[in-house]
Image (tube, rainbow, N blue to C red; front, side, top):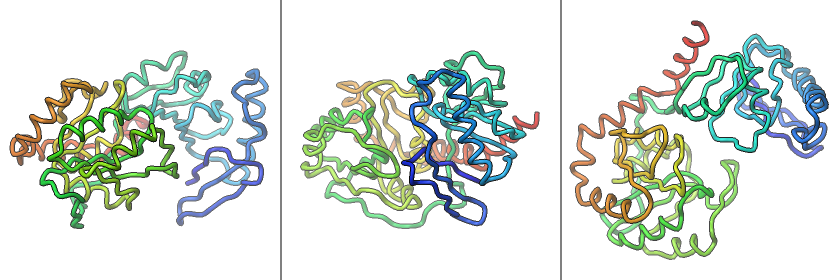
Length: 323
């Protein structure tokens, strides 16, 4: 298996072996800005880059792309099977229809992503985000979350621009009896870019009930969520289907979010718009944790996550392909 990194500077051509069955290719583009060139020229330049990659990997059996900005002409890989798998909205991807029409199958974790793809002949299917835990590998590691309050609310992930950090500051200010624990990078990293107002972040960090623990071993994430009473996320606008929810669900603990397209009317989470409605909901949940974190409700959330384990979703994809 070969993973192709995003393009790097001209001197970055290299191949790294990660394991016996996985290698990573880092390549320099022929030229940058190919998506702004005429189609025939862009296709020709992409073909040159594809040929360079195939010279290293050999002809692939399957090419699986998550990126609408590169290698839109998937057929040029001459693979037996080609898949396009968008996981986010890409409003600036003006050539998404090309990669869609070049794919044999299209998978996406939100129906809106499939609805927004036009002009293709491929088979498209909804495949939700996966959970990398199974019922047999629940973390036994004991982690004590920081803070002196009895109730802990946990957020995992980047502090990226769609996150409503201003509202989170208001939430933490209104709920001084809750410790808010943030797990994830506070600066740019290999996990992505962070974007926030420096003054808002500094105000949060200065609060005695807010704690930023930084990046942790991925295998320990579930231990942090297991140790929390509430797992939450607040966005500025309606989002589709955040991947972090699967880890939240697997912990079994109550999940508070702002509206999400793919979980309308779902019993798996508690939803309110940012503002007074969310403040009221948060207060209601924190004062009734025995109900929201009952054995039955925790089992419902965890069962949903286990049902969508990576191994189960791979089986589902395989069934779709072989139909």
